[in-house]
Amino acid sequence: MKSPMTKKPIPVPPERSRRARAVAELVPAIGGQAFRRFGFTQSALVEHWESIVGPHYVRHCRPESLAFPRGKKDGGTLKIAITGALAPMLSHVEPQIIERVNRLLGYAAVARLVLRHADMEGGTRAPPPAGAADIGPEHRSTLRQIADPDLRASLESLAQALSASKGPPIVR
Image 1 (tube, rainbow, N blue to C red):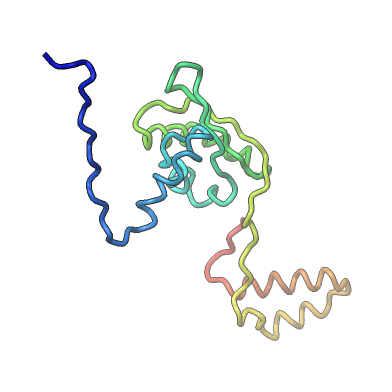
Image 2 (image 1 turned 180 degrees about the vertical axis):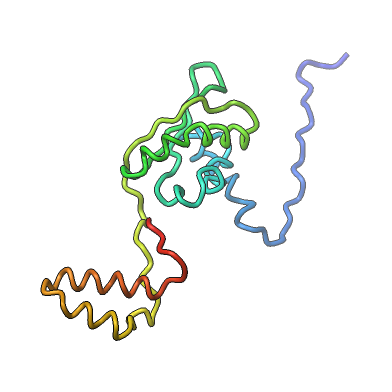
């Protein structure tokens, strides 16, 4: 008979490799605690946020937390921080976002979205490329006729931006 005090062998962890590892391999292990704190048991939602909401919305919103009803792991509420102007537009595509999140996670994790107005960092636009200052003499002559200096400066910057871009203007 074995004594009840017999110790079980302690498993020995495999030797750690001394190879260089990509940061992407380390982030899930390091960021796991922070993600779980805000309800993200998997970091996939944050990592794939651009593919979920698309390139137009990704600059203006971010997931904040995922909360589930007590004792359940489905039918949760995803809280999203979004700039005020795009909240009504994002609410129109809410069913698509819920479907994409659930498809990514592999089960019906999200049942509804809650939008919270917030300011997004990094929302500044890139300056126009160098060389955009040349707008041509025909535009300059029409701008000289405008008496208001503020209006003239605004129209000149618009003409510079349009001359630097290719194709139709993109409204952001």
